[in-house]
Image (spheres, rainbow, N blue to C red):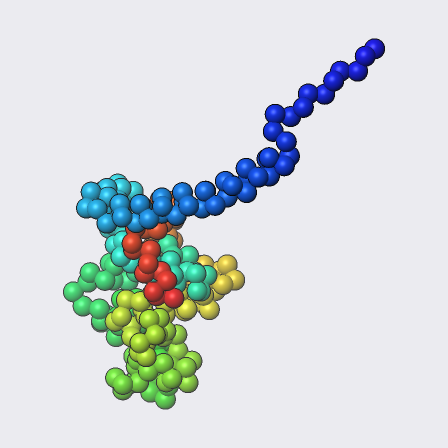
Length: 238
């Protein structure tokens, strides 16, 4: 029985290699110009309106929409401390309704966007700290990173301006992430961490309710945020 002649390939291995090497720079060039084009498109009003419309649609079933300007900050805090950004959003929602309360000081003395007791923010090692943790900490010490480090507080200077301020949204969210990570989230103990934040089983249930609600839409929200100039904030806050 005669052997069948093997057909010669239409393209030799050498030509294939040449074409591959030729296509690599071409692909890079196409990607580069496509990226530049997208950057230009993002600045157009109708693109911004389209993204905003999509953002509203994703959050239409939420009682309070997560303000999109906060999401990159939550995400940056998650990257640094390993605390889900959706959990940080849930705490922000419960504590100050995303900072829309008339005052950011509670009746018992908790302060700022994420409602820290001064002694928790500055550190319970401070000589004036006792009881519920309001303390008698001088104002200049409340936001001093060196004082906070000295007394073992959870306050964080997230934007590197030399001040750890519970009334600064970036500092407040990073401080909450710092606290939750050390309170149990870093070990996967979410309920324990939430309870330590506020000693109430009802509080834990409320936080978990919003956490799971936000988890359901987190992928869509992340994609929308990263598709806009808002994503720059993530690098700026680190």
